Length: 364
Ligand code: FNR
Image (cartoon, rainbow, N blue to C red; front, side, top):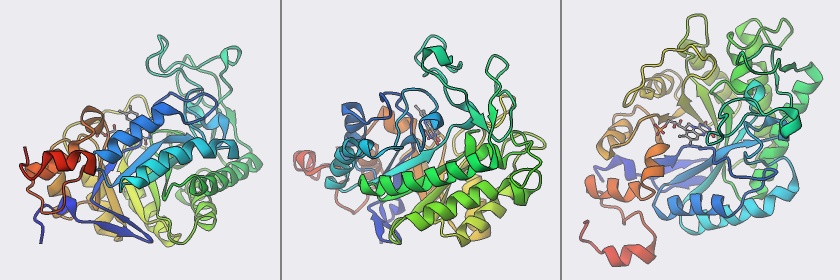
């Protein structure tokens, strides 16, 4: 058996990943009207050729108002499908699996992209922004607008938009769907007592705060083919007293597992700007390990995973089933090849044949 456990395939429903290395979803802020373009092709193509088993496309708006910025990717209309198809076809042709993170930014929507001089601040309506919506009409930043509190009918509409976006994503060639319930965006906003002050059936008790999650999961699962894996990204803790906790995440993971979710992608934070987060290598891995151990659901570990031995140990020790790399895959799209060399994997080199033949068996 290959000691490089990182390179053992992972089968989930009808999809087999060639290894345990996934690209974490990362906003590119480079779309107009939600459309994918050459940038998205280049971004995904490099990492498919570079050997990752799964690529999860950035937080993608299920409705236009669900985008973090006016330049985020979208899948709210059929017209988006052909340009996405071009990206997924290339990924698939090179042996990787295209996944997509479906998202609604909630109260954190309509902001400037990071390289704008007013990064993070809200884009005014006159400049192409819109009024953000959320579980509660409470400002996320003091300099931001008071969001619109969603009515029950509007909440049900968004649940439907998630399901339609999932169907469209499948038609666009994506084979793994991830729902974004992390980082203070709409899904997490319903879960976290720090962001949800509702007094109706969508707020208050744990059972009420997970209602939007369960309704979304049910609607999306029903819209997906049986063979398509469904992931959910959680912020497993708010890192704030009185916020959403790991214990809550374990309970929620059990509930969504029963509804046909296959994997929890374990991130943290984002509900509060005052959280004190102990960032460091592997800092979120214990959440993936605990949820996996307590519920038996597959988990993904993410956050400052940068070294091949580190990533391999996470899989080999059974702390997670998948490692997701964000910034390290931006630095080095061919990171899987580096890991393959370092770990002396016995699998074929994880790089396109156009390069593999030239690199030979030298492992240098
Ligand atoms: C992110 N992150 C992120 N997370 C998410 O769930 N959806 C997203 O669209 C984005 N967008 C995004 C853009 C960029 C440029 C970065 C750097 C990060 C968070 C990301 O997926 C990951 O969880 C963190 O970056 C931590 O992993 P690394 O970068 O330490 O490997």
